[in-house]
Image 1 (cartoon, rainbow, N blue to C red):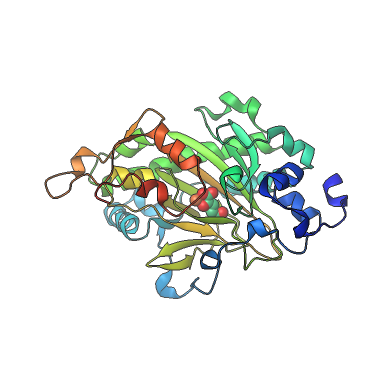
Image 2: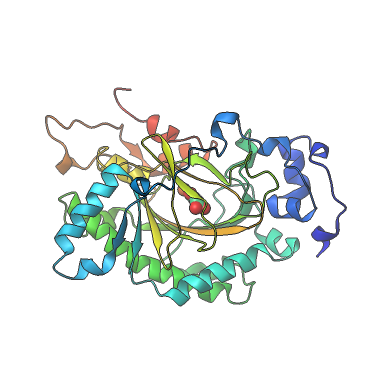
Length: 366
Ligand SMILES: O=C(O)CCC(=O)C(=O)O
Ligand SMILES: [Fe+2]
């Protein structure tokens, strides 16, 4: 592989982000070039670096729910607990969610396989324009960022139903990519119904209410290569997701995802066969702030690479995002300006990740 044969370069040789993007396209090829220090444009300001704040104290574990209980007498209690977790945390893990273990394993396998392809294969999908249907790239929005995220990405911006309608745009390497991705997407559609029906009920709405709103699906593969200075960089910087909900599959071997809770970073420990559910900004808007989108980030590791797979469920472009009328009354006035989903997504995608800044920008009575 040509990229691995280059002589080691020093971080000081890389002067600017556009220059780096032009030469390396992303993190993997930078690491393969043999660097021993990260370039300056990966170094986070001091207050953003992963510090001592991350906690594994038992009081600070994010909630874990066994979804098997949705099918029996325990449904009411579980729905209530999920609602409370959406208010308090905006993030929780689920087990016994019904997604087959081998489907998750294959998806993880083809994702890793894709990021390890030779550069010219990955370049077939390369773009810096976030709206491409299937796009390989790096960081979040590299040409609008002052500090880059230590990750490369492959994004499927639109998943159709059935998913294989636009399969010709999907990578066909590694050879199992298309089949594994299709199977994973189909299982995500099933688990979405379980989770969104529970959240709808917790809000006092018809079971299928939110399912009818968050009908669009996107898929994102994140690759976080080993990093020589994990104390200075972040894999993904603090942000909330623009989705209604996000369902995340994380690598079982490396703990890296952290959620902000009461001003502390709490590590989301990977549990076997679990999925992480994250409340996104669109659910915060619809619930009029009752449910909070979780601010989260991912750290990187000196020895281990990591892959995570995110499935976003969100409203269609022409949906007007607004608090649900049934949740409003004299003492619950709307907290957010109405905004078309397409416009919200443009606002979100046209800048760098910055905590919950997109949501904050449409708050009423700031
Ligand atoms: O890799 C992770 O655990 C987090 C990924 C994430 O937050 C995202 O893709 O939005
Ligand atoms: Fe996220």
